[in-house]
Every structure is written in structure tokens, then in C-alpha cells.
Image 1 (spheres, rainbow over the protein chains, first blue to last red):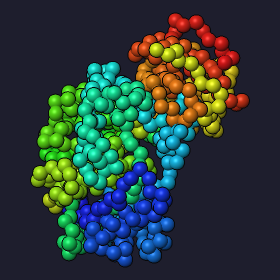
Image 2 (cartoon, helix red, strand yellow; image 1 turned 60 degrees about the vertical axis):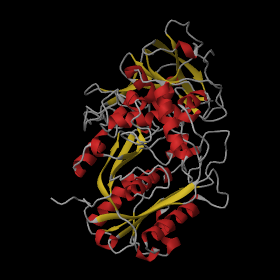
Image 3 (cartoon, helix red, strand yellow; image 1 turned 90 degrees about the vertical axis):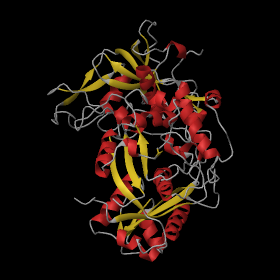
Image 4 (cartoon, each protein chain N blue to C red; image 1 turned 180 degrees about the horizontal axis):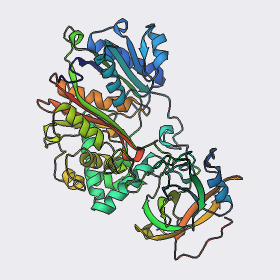
Length: 388
Length: 147
């Protein structure tokens, strides 16, 4: 049977400049810059687009004067890429535009960023925010397996050093960092120090998918969707984020390993194993998430994520380079959705061989992810340089 | 070392929902409640019209004895909102009846927190209409329940 996404190509990716602030922009305008940049990268124009799957959806349809076109609501993230691919694979669309951005959203710095502060009745009164929610998950792993703050700090230092050498990262040149630097930074929500946590910044990005026969006529180098999946355990930041929570679809997979079902489906679709992956563009809201994802996605056994990162696997030149642009910790984290789509963009850049820094030599298969156990969801996508 | 205490009124307060109002009514009356399925005994993780396990409409609020054990916690030093006094210790409590509660630890020092420690509920008002459950180590003297 032919691969379901054999006739779907990622033909354009783009990041605007990323910075702490862009006073001249709002989220819609910087997302639009991401969209236009991705179309230019693909060698296409807005008039070629027949489906909009952007953060501002119908507003972008009007702004670009595209109607009537197909539009999809929701986050332009890994599920958005999979929906876009399905629209093309089923003949409903030829060219899909995804874009996201954030600017002018985080203004009150006495509080944590607005997207980190859930208002739900069962968490708001006790001062929960994303760092605390993810800390409640990390604590369980540390208690169960003896995972250490030093192992968490090793993850953070690795990712931050990737950003340190990336000229496009918001925190370019701010390192290099050691695990000791991370442990010496002030405590935010134990066990997370400041440098264990994602940064906040502003920026936009975009991506274009097209039918494969169109892709071959374009000047850009296509990348291919080898597999994907999406796992939810429930709404983010509504209830106690419990490692052991399970549901009926697979009681063997607790919330602590949310994303495992998605990863296994992704690898099955691709006909690949974790050992076939050349680079892992993992979503890094907090350092512990990398250790968790390594276990959830079967790169190592349960409880082995801490030793795995301590043994140098994720270091430059290691068996599994991670989050090579600096991720949410150093490259950018614009809050709503841009940082989700940017994990996919970086995976595409890796398999295209077009990274300005930390290019993994001859990378052919990249995994990327969105979400985390503290948020009760994790999405997985496998991107490749060869047509499936 | 810092003794953990309840927040003063003025922090962002919960907005009860249609299904959760009995939970908050209970807190105001000094009674911790949880949802239980009369049909299959499941304890839903959030207020819902139906049981997440047997999918019957058999849920009712029942009182907890207010005791349990510490499942997970964090110590927050960077508050999500400046109205929160730090440090505070959001905690997941596993009640003796099996329900899990999102709460916070008080009445001990942050370094005293150990997994599985026995804890007991106490209540503190957060606003004119909202009272929040907190937990202290079981061996600690009961706090003033009027908060």
C-alpha cells in the first residue's frame, strides 16, 4: 500500500526575525510576515493558496484576498500539519498555508506570561502556572526513578548552547552554559530553575504544503511527512496534572507517557524505528520534558531518560542531537502557537540540510514534537528527506 | 527554610461552574467533597454529567474525611501573579477515598515535604464567596477552620 502522504510535500518554511519584543507588530501582522515568507521560500504567491490553516484563519483569508478558500480553525501546530497533509492527500486541497505569530501579548512582567496562567477553577486559586504544572510531573519521575536536577540541567544547558551558536536565536551569544549555570540560576518552581524553563519572546513563522507534483515544479527542496500522531489525555491546566492518570484507549500508557501512542503510530506509518532518527527537534517548555519524551517515544526505557542525557547522547555529535535551534529555551517562544510550528520548521530545515547552525550531517529523518505531560497532550511528527 | 502558609484573600479566585458548585459549597462549609459513581465506583477527574468509566448518569458528590497522602508537589518562588506570596507549595493530594485533589501544602517547612506523607485538609477563605482547601501534615495541630 502506498504511504498515505506520498503525494504531499512540505515546500516552504520561514521564520521571521525573533526577538524579545517587536513594538511595530501585533500577533496578526507578524504571523502574516511568517506566511508571506513561507510562500516566498516555496516559490509561490498568495494566489496559489487554496487552504488557510493559520492562527488568524478567516482574517488571513480577507487580508490576502483569497476567498473562497478552505479554512481550518485551531493551532497551526503538528495536528495542523497533519490536517493539511490529509486535505492534500484526499484531494480537497492543492496548496495549504500555515502561519502563526505572537507580538504585543506579554506586557505585564510582574506576572508570568498570560498563556502560562490558567484561569480554571481547580488550579487558579493555588497559583498554578505552566512551570508549576510541569514541575508536578517532573517530581513524580524524580521520586520514582531517581532522576536528578543535574540531569535536568544537562538538558537545559544542551539546548541553550544550541541557541548560543544560532545567529537567529533570541538568546544568540548568551552562553555557553554548563549544567552548573542552570543549577545556579534562581528557583522558579522546584525542581525547575529559571534556566530550566522556556523563555518568552515574539516572532512569526509559516509553512506551505503542496501536492507532490506541484512540489517538483518548484525551486525549493521538498521535505516529506513520514508519520504523525496526536495524543490527548484531557484539557490543559484544568485538573491536577497527574503522572499516573489513564484512560480507556490504552490503560498501559499513563499521562506521564502521553505521546507514546502517537510516536508508535508515527513510526509504524513511516516503517521506521527510533534508532533510524538522525535528529530530534523536541518541544522543550521545560528541561524535564526532554527526558520524558525520550522515554515516551521509546528512545530509551522507562526511567532511563536521565542517564541517557547524562551519557552524552543529546550532546552535539551524540547519537541523538536535540532541539538544535535552541528551541523554546533560547531560539524563541512567542506564546500561542508559533513555537509549536517552529519545531516542525526546524525538522524540515534539518532534512533539507539548510540549517545555519548545528546542522546534523546528512540528516535524513527528523522527529519533532509538541506539548508535554504537564499539559496533558503530546503530538509527534516524523519528517524525512526522501519521498515515502 | 520557610514555613508554608495559606494565601491571603486577593489572589485570583476560582469561578465555580454549574457542575462544580457543590464542591465549592462544601469548602465553604468545611467539608471536602468529591464525585463518585454510584454505578461503578469510579472517581471522575473533573465535574461531568456522566461517569468517565461506565458512562452512566450516576455521579454524586460525597464527603471526604479530609485525609490523604502527598502525591506530588512543587515549591513556587516566582509567582504566577504578584498577589501570591512566595514560597507556596501547590500539591496533588491522594485522598484516602481514592480521589485526587489539586491543593497546596501549609503548616510545615518546604524541606519537610516527603512523598506519601500523611496530610489533612484545612480551609481558608480566598474571597467573600470562595474558600480553598489546603493540607497540612497529619501530625500537625489542626488549624483554625474558619481561616
